[in-house]
Image (tube, rainbow, N blue to C red; front, side, top):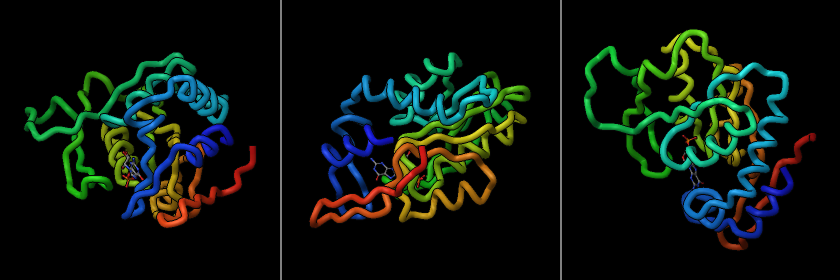
Length: 195
Ligand code: 5GP
């Protein structure tokens, strides 16, 4: 998605440890007009697919998921990061290793909001090692819902997440794929994608 690539080039900041900061427009300050274009692009890429729910993970996936959901006319459920031990049976629960914080945490979704008959699209801001999407996919599987696909705004193609998710047979759409980024020069190379 050229618009997103241009914005990453203009406003993205490369940090040490393979972290790309996009706080100016994606996950701190949020450019809602850009989000609307992102939502339309996800809709275009999953055209013809039956989807009745979008699942994301707090916190930075929520804004993008909500605007995307407007294009699909479906509700959004976000997995909560938690340390509280809910009574077994109330929630689906799995563990996720955080790329940005380097620790493991539980994510949960209430059984009330995900289950058999749901056709789910996963949405997140970034794909790095794939742990967040793997966790969300595990919740969908546990619930008996159907996983239709996953959409991420930015895939870091030099990390393993894209391969991990595609190898599981999940239909993955990444709007911008960063092939490489250089902290010193600020240069970012994107993977060419067919329209
Ligand atoms: P993964 O689980 O694929 O390793 O990492 C994805 C999650 O980590 C995303 O939900 C995102 O919040 C965070 N993340 C991974 N890489 C980056 C990055 O380069 N920049 C930012 N801002 N967040 C990232």
